Amino acid sequence: MNANMIVILGLLFAFLNVARAADISSIPKNKTSLLLTNYGSAFKAFINKSGKLDDSSAWIQWREVVEKTNPSLYQQLIGGSKNNNDWVAAYEKRFKKAFPSLKKYSPEIIAEFDQFESKLQKHIDSFGVLFPDFDFSDVSVYAMPSLLMFNGQGPDFNGKLVLTFGIDTIVIKKHDPQSVSNESVLYPHEIFHIYHGKKLGLTEEKFMASGTLLHSAWLEGLATHVTGVMNPQASLSDLLMDAKLGDYCEAHGESLFQKYSPLANKKISSKETQKIYGEWFLVGGQKGDTPARAGYCVGLLLARRASQKYSLNEMVNWSFEDISLKIAPFLKL
Image (cartoon, rainbow, N blue to C red):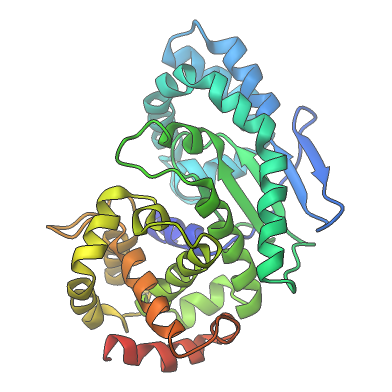
């Protein structure tokens, strides 16, 4: 599987089984039987050891203090591919790029790690009001430093449900004037992906066999729509977590529909489609005058249009086949 496919599946699935190290806290949650693993202590130890080091020496400390807790996890999430022989070089490059920001914002990052458990539980409780049937009893959650690679995602790894939150990215995005950092959007968005994936019985094999760009837009769009239901005062920029994309979606949503419609039935398994997916859904995917992550706008508008005809409960319970049949007319396929 190539690196692009790993990134794609990382946005859509959440399967992980990892070993815990002694300096990582694993805290079972009573209400939801959720298992939270918090890397805050490892990150703090790394900062204490590397604060005055150059980036090459700090890289060695990172691998010894943070990565050692779960090398396979970091190889996949940061390196890009289990089968990429050059993953260490890519990983080191990402570390050295992120290191100055990790040092600069380390007090805020450490504080965010400390607050993560209570924040997560608050959002789980709110989510349970809207979806009282949700069950996270087999879900592991990891609060970890992501080297600014992601703020929240669910990687496909060893067949276990997982949520990963990049605490460094969450903090540093608050200092990016272009980014719209809204935890009331991020947390329910990622939690919904787990809930929805379980409803669909979504697996890597199933998605690769029958998934299309229409399904990609719907999965992200419905998650974004649900966060809007939970945050009725949120703007498009809030929901899409990007001011530029929010403004563009507001002004040019219909033209995005017209551009996306001819692509919607393309199978996600093909290399051509993986490239197209990157252009529409990944942070670095801007093409021409279409902003990066424009597929989220398409998906959100699809979900909003569908919600005028179908209830949220109906939409959440659609099978892959139902999605193809019921959503295609909104794109005039």
